[in-house]
Image 1 (cartoon, rainbow, N blue to C red):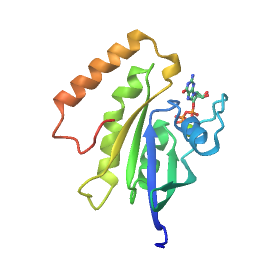
Image 2: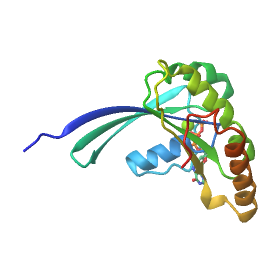
Image 3: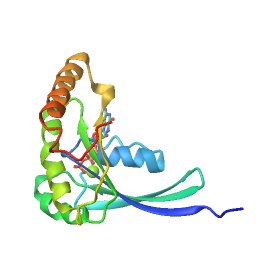
Length: 157
Ligand SMILES: Nc1nc2c(ncn2[C@@H]2O[C@H](COP(=O)(O)OP(=O)(O)OP(=O)(O)O)[C@@H](O)[C@H]2O)c(=O)[nH]1
Ligand SMILES: [Mg+2]
């Protein structure tokens, strides 16, 4: 019988302050949701092991703080990452618009420029969203994709 393949992956999550990056990761890794808000100072790392077919994936997920004053500092953690989650709050248009800057920071730091670097767009706090927000965001999303298909090496899911 073939032994399982082992793959280590470094992932990063970025996005504006308070969009829910830490909560989301804690829910994913520890199945715990924290109501109380404690901003992430710099970055912290969470690990999770998942089995995918005959492969054991060891995820090292870097949770970064969204505060403006940490932006330059956290960008030093992007290097060597295998993929990125671009997170925004679906009730906060500014957090969505800010993703262009976050994405630019990430693409500038991931050297050498990998041929394909997966980026996932993640809209959080959908429990708070109403139809108004949904249609505004859908329009923005459609426009962003229309306007910059060749500027981006990212794929939106
Ligand atoms: N209603 C709702 N609240 C959420 C959700 N996710 C996070 N929150 C709340 O939003 C606040 C901020 O969450 P955090 O996870 O700390 O946000 P963050 O993006 O890590 O913030 P920074 O570390 O400062 O960049 C907290 O009070 C959370 O409880 C969600 O899906 N729905
Ligand atoms: Mg945080």
